[in-house]
Each structure stands twice: as structure tokens, then as C-alpha cells.
Length: 279
Image 1 (tube, one colour):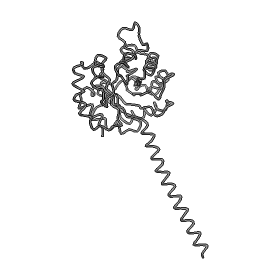
Image 2 (cartoon, rainbow, N blue to C red):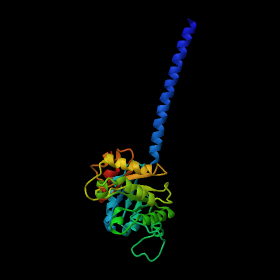
Image 3 (cartoon, rainbow, N blue to C red):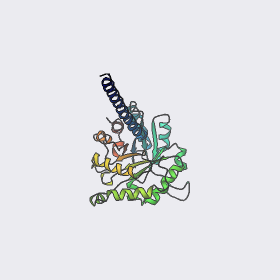
Image 4 (cartoon, rainbow, N blue to C red):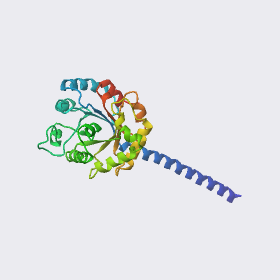
């Protein structure tokens, strides 16, 4: 009888031990998942395109600063302004939590490249981010994957974080070629690029400025495909394309999406602040 009691006690001791191990492993897994998610920085970037004079830029910032006083400190906020506003914005943003971004960068430091701007010029005025390969540059100004690659290298050479834009047209999506187009862009754009100093923005071209937003679950799916192509799985990947205050919560609820590249909705302080303060 004594042996039977010992066997029963031993059984329950082992059961309790195994249960404790399972619980601990479960908690550890959750911690690891949170750690992995935490590595990917959340970045909300406003792309002003060809909008706002210097005076209008300063007026925006004065209102915007007060709107984001309580924004979660882990969220990076970037304003990508026209070149004419970069200097005054740099002075006004000094000491604030807002990072300054440009909308283009040339691959040479100087030369006969009318209308271009170099990394040397951007770093001198404190630019931290730069948009590269936006669909409007590809569509209207002859940007190719080869020149995108050169611009990415230039940004990284000068310590500027590039935001690489990729995405498909409506025709390409209708043909079922979304994955093929984006994977091809990544393969060409990212040759010899340091993925530890990189942000990617998935911007379906058909959703930019049209009011048509890619469904959040579909954006999440495509961004997941983008992440699969990367050596560094912790690259922050944004969604861009008609991002607005009324859809940002749903967009940011998706597990693969690490922020937003915001166009028209970034032109009003309250609108961009609501996006930065999602949830």
C-alpha cells in the first residue's frame, strides 16, 4: 500500500512539473513573440509631395506638435517635406520627436544634375529619412529599379534611412501579377543594400490618391510576401495608399504592418495626428 501511495504521489508531482513547464514555455513563447514584434519599429511618415510653402510648413508644425504630445513614444513620426521647406523645418523640429524626411536623393554627391539633390546637401540640414522609388517618380520622371538601387545606396552611404516604395498598378493586379511585380522590384532594388538600415512601403499604385484603399487583410498578405523576400525579417514595412483617420485603426491592427506612409491625409495637423495616435 505504501508503494502505491508513493507511485501516486510521484505521478502527480511529475504532472505538476510538466504543467509548470508547459505554462513557462507558453509564457516564454509569448515573450519571444513580443520581443520579435518590438524589434520592428512603428513609423508614421507624412509625404507632403509638392504641397506647402515654408510659411505653411511652419504653421503646420506649430499645430501638429501639440497634437502629438501624448503619442506613444515608441512610434517614429516623420515629415517628408518639399526641398524648399527642409531648412526651416530642420530648425523648427530641432529637439522635437519629429524626424525630418526628404522626397528624393541623387546617387552622386555633386555634378551637373539639374533639379536633383545630393546626400551631402540633405545631411547638412539634418535629414534623417528619404523616400526612394515612389510610384510618382517611377511614373512621371523615368525612375527605374536601377536608379532606385543607386539612390538607396546613396542614402545609406550618408547615414539617411531610405523608405523604399514598391507596388503594382491596377492592370497588374487585375492580371494576377501583384506578387511577381513586387518580388521583381525587390530583387532589383535591394542589390547590395543594407537591410538593417531600411524601411519599405507597400503602396499599391491604384490606391494612391484615388480614395480606393487596399483592404487591410490584403495589404497585410502582400506585406507578408514582401517580408518573406528579405534577409532581415525585422525591416519595418509600412502601408501607403489612401491612408486616412477613419481606416488607420484597421490597417494598424494587421500583424505584418509596421506603420503608414501617408499622402493627402498628412497635410492637416489634426488628420495626421489622429493617424499617429491610432487606437
